Every structure is written in C-alpha cells, then in structure tokens.
Image 1 (spheres, rainbow, N blue to C red):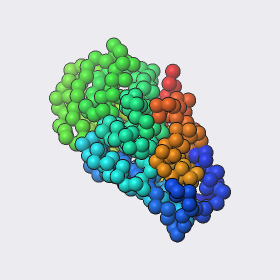
Image 2: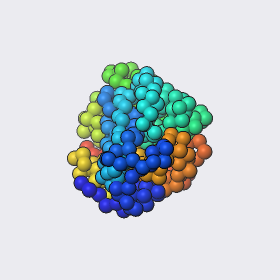
Image 3: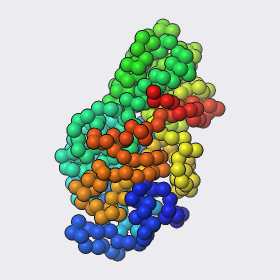
Length: 386
C-alpha cells in the first residue's frame, strides 16, 4: 500500500522523502548507487521466538513498515533489514551483536529490545562504533555506562517506576503493597524504583524466575496472602505476570496486580484468563493509538492485519531516524552515529532529541496507565511525572 510522502516520519526524513522518492543514496566513497539497492542494512535486535517474543515481533513489524515505506519512496537505493532473534536472552546477545558488527553493510540497529540483552551487547556495539536505538530497553543504568553508541526512543524506568508508584498511591489508594520481580535486569531495576518511591507502603517482596523458567508460583502466592496486601507490583514480563495473576485469583486474592510495559500485551490476558486479568493495571512510556500521529495505526493494520502492539510505533520512529541519516548520505557507521547524536525531529510518537548519554529528552517522556477491561487493554490516563 503506497503511502503519502508527506507523512510524519521525523524531521529530516520527512523532508528528504518529500524531495524525491527515487533519488539515489550516496555510498561511503561519495558516488551514487543505482539499480534498486545501495546495499546498506539496518538490523533489528530482539526476541522473535521464545516466551517473550510478542514484544520483539511488535517492534520488528514497526521496523519492517518503516523500511517498506522508505524503499517504496527510494527505489534506486533500497535499505535491507537484518533480523536478529535474541529470544530475549542475554546469553544469545554477544554472538548476535558480533554478527551485526561483522556485516559491514549494517550501519545502524534498532534494539536491543530488552535490558538484559542490552547489557551484554551494547559494549560490543560501542567498541565497534555501531549506533543502536532501543525502542523498549528501559533500565536506567544502560545510559550510565559510557557507551558512545547507545540511544533509546523511549523514557526509562526512572520515570516509569515512580509513575507506577504514584498510580498505586493516588488511584488505587493502596497502603499495603507486595513487590515481586523476575530477577532480570529489567524486572529488578523497575521493582527497585517502585520500592524506592513507595517507601513504607511496601510490606513484602519476593523473587521469581523469568524467561519461561518458572510456571508454578504457590510459594509467592502464600507470601502475598499472608501479607494482606491490597496491591501487588510485578517487575517482569507478560508470561510470568499472567501466571501470577491467575494463581493469585485462584487463591482468592483480590489485590490489584500492577505491572509495567513488559506486561502490557494481550498475551498477558491469555496467560491469566480473561476473568482473572480483569482490572490489572499496566504503566508504560508508550502512547495509546489515539495519541499516535499520522496514519501509522491504519498503515500498520493494513500491512500486518492487526493493530500495533506495545512499542511498534517507537521502533518505527527509531528506524526512521536511522533511515533519515541514510537518506542524508550518512552511510558510514561514524557518520550515522554523529547524525543520531545531533538529531532533532518529529516522529509518530512525538518529538525526538537525545541527551549526551543517549536518553530521550526528558521533556518528551510520557507515562500512561492502562487497565484490562472486558478482556481488552484500555488506556486510562496519562500519569503526571511530578
């Protein structure tokens, strides 16, 4: 489905695509290429199979849509996609990072998608000078390691954790909160931020195993029941989150379960059951479809037959930032890195500008609360950050 070239793609990209769809890219040597492909690639790095694949598939589809639209407008210099399936595992990450680094045609990466795999892959990307923009890795410490190639198109857990705590206090009015995490870099970091913000309202905590390694949670359920908690926060992903909610409900525990972006997926409802999932709250530095600019939601559904998932739009924007650089002739790794560092523009999610450490400018960060209602994940409200 051919798209209008004047859609919002993000600053330079929108202007470049509008100038001439069939214009050729410049190679590293400055010569123009033709014949349908310049040979450049961007990679997507995230889980496409495994227990946490839904998030990666959402993002990969966003990248694929960005590439399709770009290539339709730039037929003489198409950009290819290298999809790297991490299965969400930090153990897989180094070899996949090396695969991207060793492919000289890969000049930018969308991802890694998860914080744990980011910790394993990002030092290698930094050493190689390969720019990467994560659409979902939210652990705050990722931007504190001095990695020169790290960027993210989403707010981190320094905003999301306190926002979740604020919702628990102000909206749920809960003064007894039990906190669980899945021991992942993402889950532990997020749970720590929530505990810090809730202070004395945390009356108990426990740890479980993520990544599909644990399916039985009776021990945790017993602790929650004994605590008398009226709210439970889980730092982790939808697979374990759904099973925990189901186990709590089966034990007669009516405490509201609160999770974050890693749980915000229809697969959570499948795992918990529609009845048990009802009333669950998610926070996310991601926008409801009604807040997304342009025709992205309709374009995505036309391409893939489903509505965009969590972070599909952030990944779409991240890919378009890289493509804007390629369109501008920044086709060496060093030039594309410099382009992203200095980037300012508009995407379908909002404004993009990065701090010196690769964080999304704080003024652009939004946190929204969502609730499971009648078997659907429904936006509730934007959560104030102060």
